[in-house]
Length: 317
Image (cartoon, rainbow, N blue to C red):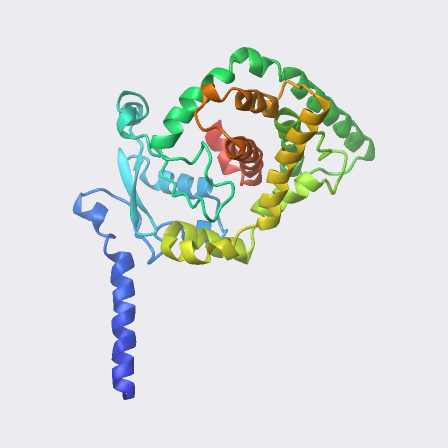
């Protein structure tokens, strides 16, 4: 085989790859829907993958460009994504026609990700019945029972701020918020004092940082997961933050076992799920995996919220 044949083979391979990833990039143009030009493989989220912007800042940037349009089109990899600006259309999607738009839009990899198969990400066939059966245990009365736990955490925050004022040192408000949120989640979910405010090297805060801190490994993992799921199926198991996953799962297990052995009752999330587990008729096939994934996910997603850039907080407001 001469060099010409090798070069031709490489050229054909590259063209095939290019066509595979770009074949859908005229999707919105054919439908006369405006939108930014996508980048091969990544689509319109290059800044997110390279950690130059958060997903919130990226969406704000695109919104400002197309805010006068009722809709505009983006690409998540090669997948077309429609962004709705028109309020009437948004109401129809979220209320009137919600039965048609029930999918979360996330792909699940249960064999690879320990905490991926949870209520936030499940497909409609599973999240609907689980939500219907879980909702009755989260009554306003039971949630109000957690209020003293929030007051206790607020007291710790007040003492911490008093100490900061005395020392007259500058404080990173984002880090302060993350520590307070970690303490609140720890108290309301696990019934554990995480000491994120009082201890600079709190294990829970360290794991929270490690889970979402930008790294080359995380960039590769998120890129494969979002844009090349077939490669993620093969190599994803080598890219997982196993130490963090095992930490949160073990915390839930240890907390549940300790409460059973010592007959401890506390008005928090873990107690509600333990009560649900005692009555399997309330939720078919409920097992330890459901409790573990719900409670661990609650902790992880709470930490994720405060780990993101400021845009997400602006979007909430």
